[in-house]
Image (tube, rainbow, N blue to C red; front, side, top):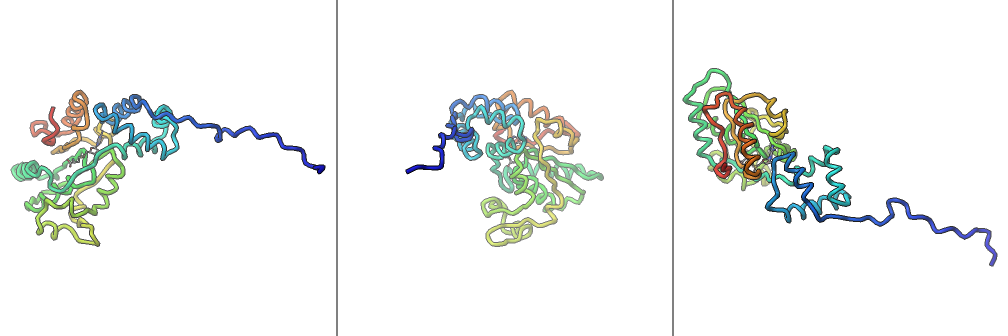
Length: 260
Ligand SMILES: C[S@@+](CC[C@H](N)C(=O)[O-])C[C@H]1O[C@@H](n2cnc3c(N)ncnc32)[C@H](O)[C@@H]1O
């Protein structure tokens, strides 16, 4: 039958329809970039990194590790997302409590007239700075004190501000402390406002100048972060953290695993 319509020429595939080439093999460049930015090394965990990055790329429609690297260098939101994915924020109340006890004793001995400033770098989801606040309140320390918690992970800091914890995270606190400082809502333990009022949180990377711009503190805690750095980076971090002390003779409280 005669047709009025001309036969259509086959359409050229649009750019987005052309075959996409995926390349998720060599993690080295992204790994080195991530280490340069955060200090965290994956040199001994390349396969774990590769799996995490592959999933991250697929979820964010990024076709290759090369493309990921280009995006990371210009897109702060994607970079933050990756930092949140690749940092380990495990922590809990009264972790390595002997150091917190030593801090309380030191503060009591000094009997300072001016408010005491304490830095927790890093603080992850807040349990460490809140533990210090609880220990000071429990010991009846009557000086004013302010604790600053910093971390590079924005999601962890959000949780720190919410201060709502599961039973597992407060397990080291005895029943009396649990009841005194938390209220139970559903299965969450909500920290009371009095403890929260002593602590403030800021997102900082310890290797960036905005971290040292926080100024100097009477006491500096930095526990269980250096374990993610290689030897040279640990030393660099150590001297940055030591420079944040008002009185270097006190020494930074490092974690037991943060060996040099
Ligand atoms: C295991 S947590 C330690 C929390 C707490 N200090 C403790 O001992 O329980 C380690 C934290 O270090 C943070 N971190 C890693 N590199 C960092 C950097 N360059 N600057 C600031 N925080 C960093 C991570 O986001 C993570 O929350």
